[in-house]
Length: 298
Image (cartoon, rainbow, N blue to C red; front, side):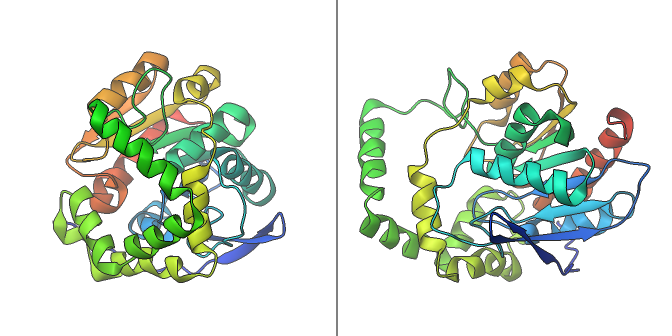
């Protein structure tokens, strides 16, 4: 069973490219590197509330809403890994002001990788939790290959969603609380972790005026650098955490690919789904604390 930590930490906004970016900060420790927690697609700083409270007892902990998500602005821009990479790098450079351990879930993990590869002075280390992003020679999620009929249907659906009316209708469908709950129940092993509060934290930002265009933009964004390309230029310590019950990606297969290109990575597998930090926070918090303490210098 998951033990929920219900404490909410109020945050503030930072102006980036004339857009308000929401973030939270908790704890102080100049003897250890700070942590920056980065959420996945559709989530926000709220998704880290079970981690911030505990980790801030020993670290200076920051969490940020990527542009287009959570309480950050939802401007009509073209969203991409490069955009979020620059946002995170400049936040570290201008606000945190010292090299930081970047911890990201899913889409947030890919953004953290982009920072570590392209702006190495910002990254003291990287922690990936069921990280998204394509490799050059394999399915982006490490899933089983689909058959030709499925592939053709997927291509047709993808071309259709790029139509503004189609993406708007799809967005209105997927943002329903009932569907959010249904999706979460599929990607969490511990169903008790899917609470009304969690559903509402994902639903509320989708009500913002710019949310439908963000959704459409993410689906039409140009594909960024491949994960193996990013790993080839990254030099900081890396830890990957995989929830093995994730139906969206094969954690063992993706882990093998990461180790192929970054053999020094530390790997952990947990009995959890796509969001282990929220589902088994005590385990993830302990892994983060121990790994940073042993492997990352200030």
